[in-house]
Length: 207
Image (cartoon, rainbow, N blue to C red):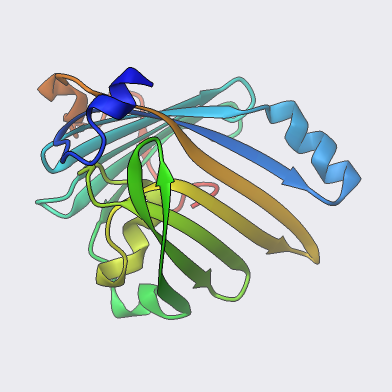
């Protein structure tokens, strides 16, 4: 609470953000499967225009997303029992094709989250995914979930609520920031050299 209050509403260019991701469904069978995953914690390190997000889970394995916003490029590393060790490189500037089917509305509503005043966005992606996002402009970090939105979306999401339609079943996903810390981050966190043992993939699960 102290750290959140102390740095509230100040621009933070370097630090760490902790987020919690929870999934659920109205379908009992799917909800039971999602409950096995439990809450998934993402740790995001950021410094100036660079970010690194790490998420690890016994079932889904480990995913690392490194972004260089100045160079507009990213590297995703995924290591799990189903696909092995894979990596994917992307351009952070979405193409016109990427932006098709995405509508973004800034509602001009705000919400205070951990001391940060956040703008509310309604986002629809290809009619199958609807999101409500509360984002602050005080954190310079980049997230994997919002890189495809283009210039109509700005800020770092402090809270994301997604409803995803799959084969007539709705899956709900909530990603909320639980802690923000302004602290020094080592430059090697953002090294985009592909580690040994990883093979290239054009498309990774869940992306």
